[in-house]
Amino acid sequence: MKVIVKILVVAAALWVATKVVDGIVVSGSTTTETAVTLLAVALIFGIINTLLKPIIKVVGCAFYVVTLGLFALVVNAGLLLLTSWIANQIDLPFEVIGFWAAFWGAIIIGLISWLLDLILGLDD
Image 1 (cartoon, rainbow, N blue to C red):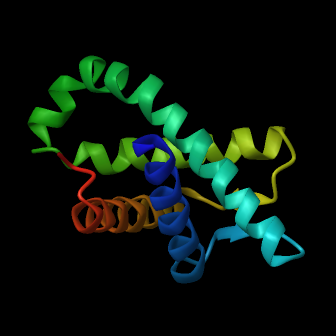
Image 2 (image 1 turned 180 degrees about the vertical axis):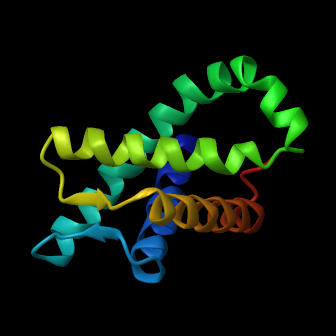
């Protein structure tokens, strides 16, 4: 149940990012198609974060230390770009155009996910 709620939280954060950041686009023709796309992209983003982020943290440990953790912002932007690429490969109407859109989108997604996790009590 917690995983489903987490996917819904990330989908909501992605939706906010599409509204706030120019360059993050969901081009669903209906509200239902947009919602399904956001849920699918949230699932892809969650899988990518689960599989790749720990590996990147281990490999890039020195960068995290030297930059006082700011390298995480670049990593999150890269993971969002990878999510966009995978969504494009499976014909989902989701696109992140450029590094800076991914950078700001990753910050917004991270903040909103953190806030909703806090409100919903998911960060136990």
